[in-house]
Structures are given as C-alpha cells and as structure tokens.
Image 1 (cartoon, rainbow, N blue to C red):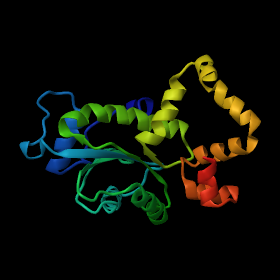
Image 2 (cartoon, one colour; image 1 turned 90 degrees about the vertical axis):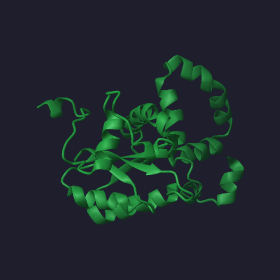
Image 3 (cartoon, rainbow, N blue to C red; image 1 turned 135 degrees about the vertical axis):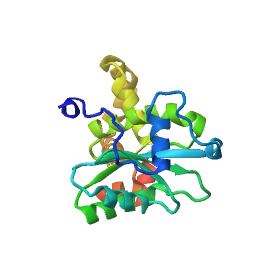
Image 4 (cartoon, rainbow, N blue to C red; image 1 turned 90 degrees about the horizontal axis):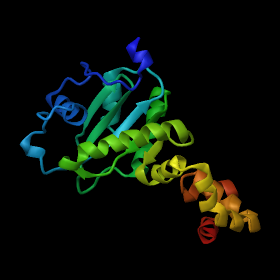
Amino acid sequence: LLKSLFPTFHEETTLNDTYQEKRWYDFLLNNEKEAKMPASIENGVFRIIQFAVSKKGINIQDLKEALKNMFAFDVTVIFLNDYHGFIVEEKQQLNTTEDDFHASLLAFENDFYVPISLYIGEFKNVYKLKNFFQYEQKLFQFARSHISASLLFTLKNILPVYLIHTLPIEIRKQLFMSIFDVFRDDRELWKTVKKYLENYTNTSLTSKQLFIHRNSLQYRI
C-alpha cells in the first residue's frame, strides 16, 4: 500500500547483492554521515546514468546484464526497485557516447519488447557526485513527465525546458515576445526551428522530416 501511495519511496532490497552495489547505494541514497566510499576511489571521477523501464516483469539479472552491455568498461548497476535504478560509470579515456546510448536503446527494445529511458549524468568528483545526483534525479523525473518524445536525456536538453517551465507565464511571454515577432514574419523559419527543437537538435532527423538537405537546415538555423 505504501509503495502504491508513494512510488518514489526508496527501500534497500536484495536487488543489490554485491559489496560494490551496496556501498554505492549507501553513499548516494542514505543520509548517514558514515556512508563513505572506499579510499581507493575517493579521488575518482564518475557519472550516473539513471534508467527506467516502462513496464515491470523483466528478469532482474537479464536487465542488469543488458545494462552492463551498454558499456565498454565495467560499471556498477544499482536498483531502486525492479524497473528503476542507476548505473555508476567511472571516467575513462573512451567512455560511452550519446550515439552509443541511442543504439543501445534500440537494441534493448528489440530484445525485451519494452522501451527504456536513460538520463546521462555529468562527470563529477566523488565529493561532488552525491549532491549533484539529487538534482539529476529531479531532472530525470521532470523529463519523464514532460518530455515524452525522447527516451535519452542529458542536462543540456532538459535544463532549458525545465527552467522555462518554472517561470511564471507572464514572464515567459515577455521574454519571448521579440522571438515571436521574428517567427511571425518568417513562418518557414518558425517551422524549421520548431521541428529542430522537437527532435532535440537532431540535425539528420530534422532535415529528413522537412525534406531538405542537412546543409540547408544548418544554414537556416
């Protein structure tokens, strides 16, 4: 009953059974001061990739294996429940790129017939990681509620929408009045920019949907 009433409530379960998983869980989610990371990674730089599967029912071990296969190096997968959690990735010379994640999203849906959404966090020193993770959790929750057209989120494509969303309507109108004037005079530019933003600045996808060359789109932008 409590889980139904409070779906964002976190509880430690047997989903995280390794020593590394438990240490990261305690460090990032528990408030106790003694929840510290081992000295061996105190100077490390990490990022957190949050994930959320749209439906329950996937075998946890299969899900964990699929998530680990998205990365070239070893990562730690921590579950908050059986369909939501996060991945801790240490900074390497060659980390997983956004294009790699896009490909992984398609492969995941083809394998499990269920879409998965990801939030790619920013690389931070361990000492800054915990506080920043709390902000990234809010951004991911906002993105899943307000940006349904995408399954891959980053700070750069969520933050502008988040900031605008928090502004009062009257201030929004005043800030964008000059832009509205430009679009009122050039409807073709308005259509181009609108489609470009709807596709989260994906140039290739936008040019295909507008039936124009990629260079023409870049020239308009």
